[in-house]
Length: 144
Picture 1 (cartoon, rainbow, N blue to C red):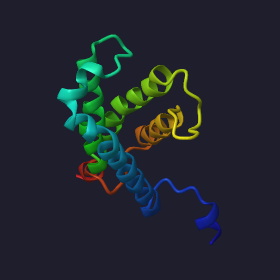
Picture 2 (cartoon, rainbow, N blue to C red; picture 1 turned 90 degrees about the vertical axis):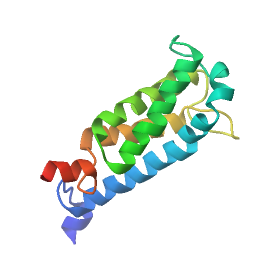
Picture 3 (cartoon, rainbow, N blue to C red; picture 1 turned 90 degrees about the horizontal axis):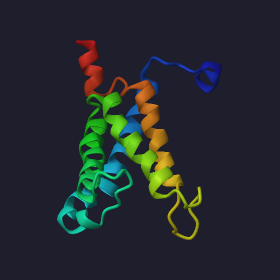
């Protein structure tokens, strides 16, 4: 009981279940909550999309879609997970510190805030440092 409550296993099934849950929630929310709507409205919204890096509105939106759709799908499946987190970590850093530079840290009354972007950034950083875990395509490949 003591080991289960206070232990910090790095191997075994429980950490891999936690990483699977993180991948499904982080990747799924990013894909369906953010990326999919950008992809479906690309032609209508590309010219008005924020261009925080000076690469052009269309290129900025395409880069965000790549991270939020393609990389999120890879994260859900656990394919090249560490590499797939990098575009999302970068995108969320830009969202928090450039796009929402003047916004408060925490959400209040539905106004824009840094908080959601930082939570996504943290979830991506977790997967960058840990990898996808046993229940992933990365995990299968590593056992071959």
